[in-house]
Image (cartoon, rainbow, N blue to C red):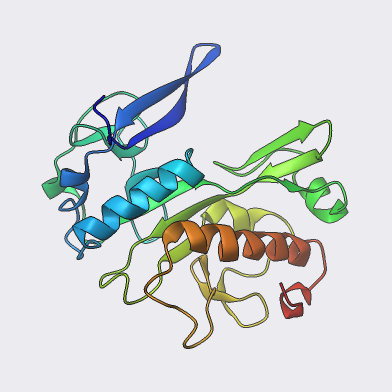
Amino acid sequence: MTPGTLTQQFPIREGDKIVHRRWAVDLKIASCAVRASPPPADRLRSEVSEMCTHLPRWVLTVAGPREPLACACGGLLVFDRGLRCVACGRTRAPSDLPGTARLAWFGLMPPVGIDSLKRVKRALAKGAPPRHVVGSDPELGTYLLVPLVAAYPPGYPACPPQVIYQPGFFRIRGTPPDHASHEAHLYGQGVMCLFASGQWTRSMTVRQVLQQRAYAHVIKMLNYTDGKHRSFAKVS
């Protein structure tokens, strides 16, 4: 790949092995793939570069109102020489995307230890929801990786990205109802409330929102799920 090329990777299971597919991000297609106005081209390139550096396992994709759009085989759609399934390689014409499709990022938040969150750990004992990962580490103990979508709204960066929990998260026993909640800082349909009025600034990036705001929201939400219903009242 030529110098300056922005590359991404994604783990794919092939038989009993995990391999990483790698590709150069097709920014030209990404800039015009969705009908909703995408970020300005220079801003998008800057954000892709930042994400590739700081959150390299997150991928630029297209999402519906809540979840990443998928290929018929179930694989994620990524910008690899057009719009292509990361699993089977099948291409998809941007013109075939639904009108609600938005340019978005998809990935897993850093691990959150759950050994001290007894209710959460019990609720996950029989398995994690789709796309969520429960694992174990000698130092961290049992942990949970929470998947999120960070979608670009029309007019970005005049307004912040929408960071959204996947529906399966709300099937963990103890989570708040999946609707607007001041107590749990939710707008409804999994969308996090991350900014008070006037807090958002155009210079903030998706990477900053995920690392500085969304990760804290995930931790507080898991504490809420564990029964600590005032977790969002605490200062971060």
